[in-house]
Amino acid sequence: MNTELIWGASFFSGSLAQLIARLSGLPSVVLLLAVGLLVGQAGLDLVQPEALGGGLEPLVGLLVSLVLFDGGLNLRLAGRELQRTVIQLVLVRSLLGLVGGAVLAHEFAGLSWPLAWVFGAIALATGPTVISPMVKQMRLQAPLARVLEAEGLILEPAAAVLALLLLQLALGDLAHWQAVAGLLLLRLGGGAVLGALGGWLLVLLLERLPADADGLKLQLSLGVLFLLVAGTQALLPEGGFPAAVMAGVVVGLRLDQQAGQLDVLIAQLAQLAITVLFPLLAADLSWSELSPLGWGGVVAVLCLMVYRWLVVQASGLGLSHLNWRDKLLLSWVAPRGIVTAAVASLFALKLDAAGLSGGGTLKGLVFLTILITVGVQGFTAPLLAQRLGLTEDLPSEAALDAAAGLAAGLEQQPGGEQIGALQAAE
Image 1 (tube, rainbow, N blue to C red):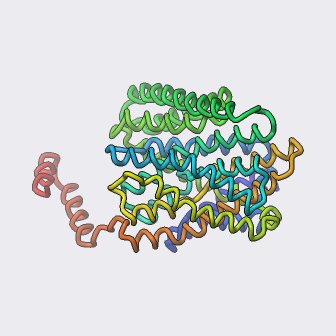
Image 2: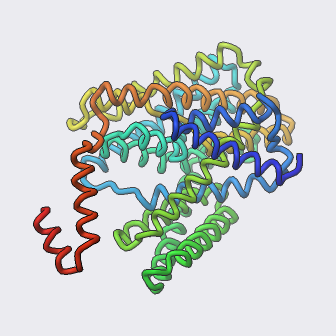
Image 3: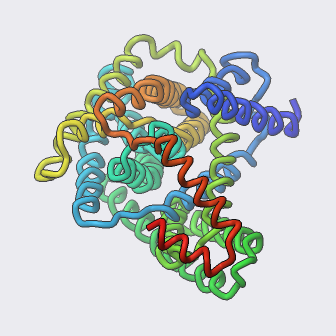
């Protein structure tokens, strides 16, 4: 199958899954994953990502950075309570999640300890590629939605960097754990600093463009972002992801309400990236990589999902504003997505190239984690949020009719009368 057909089939299958999700109300992330399995090696074998060769990895990295940039662009953590919640969740989960994931992978899935630690790091990532569509579809209340999105934005790049360093430790490229800690701080901190500088430069450029130059603003944003990510990756391997997040945060905070149409265009492109990447990476999974895991792999993933409840309970200590309903929902929503799949596929290739066994088992366990978390949580999380009363209410038909009538009336009035109508409506 030539590369044009692979990309064409990936775009079509992803867009078809989004259409079905829109018409049926089913979770889009679940359908994207299912379509990828159907057209890939586990199904009809119509899409073969390995035929794309070495060009797939950098393209996936750039598209993922676009999703992370979009997440950072819209990240707002106003209020000390919200900030403290995110910080505690990230710090506690970084430690307990890493240890718990490694122990479960070793005990139930049979991974060696070096690779079990790699899995524990990979499994930390719960990024915006799956979290954002899920919280939007379930209409989750804003504070909880922001906590989940912020957790993913912070831990996804951190997990990618940590997993790469632990893989280098397993391969013998790093001598000891102290080297892992030092390089982790260097790459995360260096990536964040470069991202902040790139975001600041982008803001200076965007502020000098006229308000109606949305197309040029989009092109300039993508150009600066992709150059920033590629340059950071060359200097600090895997440092491009934290750079993308920080650049988005800086641009979002500096431009604030002035971003205008740029936010909408970036969000649409980020959604397009999710639509094509999720089926493409899922198509790379074969049942032969899952079957050796047996029930041990399933038990490991299910225990990992339950273990998150303990992690969230520990993270919520001292946070009086989080009640048991909030903690229950936060503990249940932790799907893994594109970065997890991309990192696992890359690591399996590196392990095979180094002549070490276990790469296929690691990849199979990671994809099994994606399949179970996305499938189970994608269907159940909206129902759970609704039962717990943690969803935003849809506007009533009367309110929608009144808003539509007001808008129609404003369109028919001159500017001065519009102001009067607005004041009267208020």
